[in-house]
Length: 196
Image (cartoon, rainbow, N blue to C red; front, side):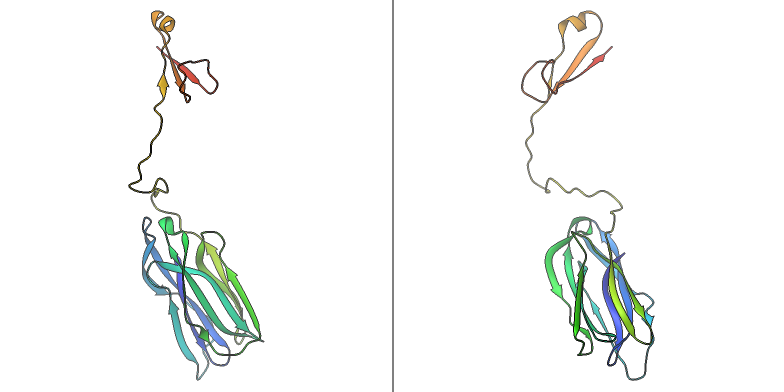
């Protein structure tokens, strides 16, 4: 699963927060589908505003910023485009801030490397006291080619095989795989074996 957004309810402070997650679909293009809401944490109060923020298709939550005082006032998410095997790229989209104005402390968190968010965590009392991301990555169900890039021509040397005549005469063949261009089984890094 990928975290692709959140939904919130807030007044002066954040009342509740829930995760919007999606199923990983295609490891080659990094796409997802079926975004759905998971149970929220917190308490709805009278007169609260409800909003949600969702990453565009092909993006997942990578980082966030929080404004807070005694409680969380607002949350801003940043989504990164997904590449092969759902690894994040440097292409970003900033979602609109969810929550109220105010808050003096501003904290931020980002998932490291090419990982993305797979969930949220936090703390609540009467209101949301803390918010954070759970980072990880989605393992591909089947391996995806990372290199060479599709369509790229790769040139490599053909291995040199060397059969010793003496070994052939005795009914056994010595096979030599030498990564250098020297036809010699005694060369450094040569690997030899015998075949009956």
